[in-house]
Length: 318
Image 1 (cartoon, rainbow, N blue to C red):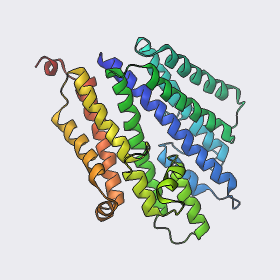
Image 2 (image 1 turned 90 degrees about the vertical axis):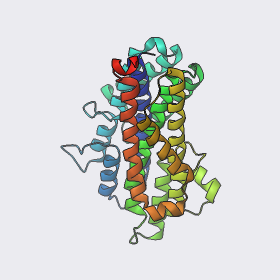
Image 3 (image 1 turned 60 degrees about the vertical axis):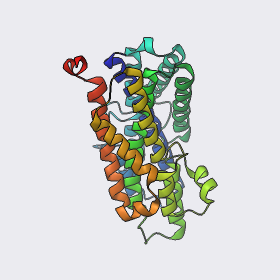
């Protein structure tokens, strides 16, 4: 497979995963803001923008509609939902012959639909239905990808992009929200309960968590579930395992041996998550563990790009 093809498939997948993550984060925040009778949400929006790597609007910084418009429709912001979908579509267009007709048609439809929303202003960013629609289209595209593409080298780059993006976005979310909430002793019990529900909903984890721990919400159990659960698709452990699987399968499919550095980073991070317990995380420090994992994710991306996308001709000849 040509390196530029692999790169386009990888980034198409990352952008689609980023759009779905952004839609879920925005939807959960909107829901809690609309239900907050106190009407004070400055800290909440600051945290949201930090997690989504979104700059604060230059004007109307206390206006909810202005902020959500930047998160959803602002094409000048590279991580807005519109920008992510447009970038995913452009990457798919460059490798049109490598993806299925169904995947291209539905991705193109996704782009045209959100472009129409942005141009016409027919849908308000204060409408929960907007975020539900974006999530539905994202899930549909994931299903079409897995069901209409052969699970060969190209699909492995798609899987790698999806789970590496998920690993990075969830790590950043947990860094921000666990640090903000778990040691808070000032909030009343009702407010603390809502904050725990909020953290779980950011990963669509409320119902899966309750099936494991019942409805007793504790920050320690929430952290354990979202970091170490081996079966939940949005846990860090699950995502890291899929990243490691993808790298191994890409190595087999491509016939190009991954570097020792890439193997060490991926293997160590995977082992840390596979064999850690919550007690060892606490002893090490959850904040430090998440920071180390975030750094490892960035290194995996950088090294993978060097090995499979930007490798030198001399290295290939040898």
